[in-house]
Length: 116
Image (tube, rainbow, N blue to C red):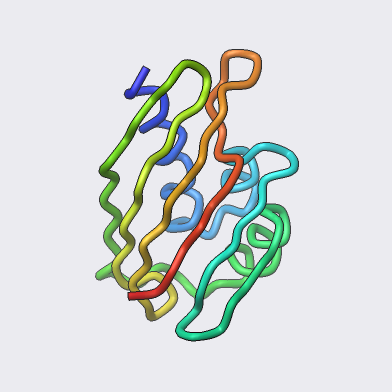
């Protein structure tokens, strides 16, 4: 089960690193949301808005971009995962994902993040 959760987070990583908004959308539930901090600025947006307004318009990925998944925990049909990103849009991020399994498919329902 942990491998399936990891694959869902890897779908997100593949999407952001390739500026593929549609892949990022598929990583999330239809009503996925995110909250977090860009520096000291608190930001809230839907996953769709993130995909369309950030991912789709981002410059090509920095060659230094790295993503590390750790801290996966699965309980039945819910899971959590932590993703650290280095050099994404000029910043380093800590993301905490809440995932759900819907119709047998793991998707990200929530993302809470901060820059580091």
